[in-house]
Length: 277
Image (cartoon, rainbow, N blue to C red; front, side):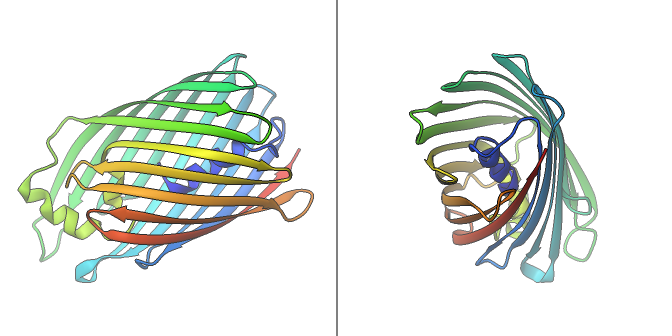
């Protein structure tokens, strides 16, 4: 999951959300591996039961051998709550069309009340890898796909604390862990924003949300395993959301990734949210 989608999930579970209003947000993230990302979101409550969301983002990374990587993300989703059951569907694009990208279809069926929510999640990812057409490698296109199945939940312990859990396991139709794919790892693994982090065997996370009145604090830990190189990454993040005025908030995020492939990376993010309706 892209980092700015995680920000949106945090926002939508916070006490400031109004189901019949809208949220406009935007922010940046940077890490000490010279990776920079910017993202924006628009979330509209079409009714008390239906919500439309649009997310978009851009990453910029300098890779070895003088290669410059620009990746884009865009997603359009619709959520409808029948009370107590709801459905969420989403279509998304992620990657660099000149190198490696994917078109993703996601669906969730969830149940929730005032205390607990549980969700079953499905995902289909269609990948295309265009091996560089230059002096490094001959031109070649590789197409493959992955199917993911997962589970997520959120538990409200009391008026101040809540827990959330999420996990997704992926099955690929090709074997990506081959020696000839080592060149892919070298070119795409340098930052947590790198494209290789989109190719995972599994991804799990757990978080603690703390309601501080008008502000909120989120502590999150995550773990994922790369499908190409088998590397494991552990991530810890803290996010703090607080009002700047009656209709807008600011959120700060700070975290550390510890990866077998690209080592330890520290990242920082700042997001602004505006509310209406």
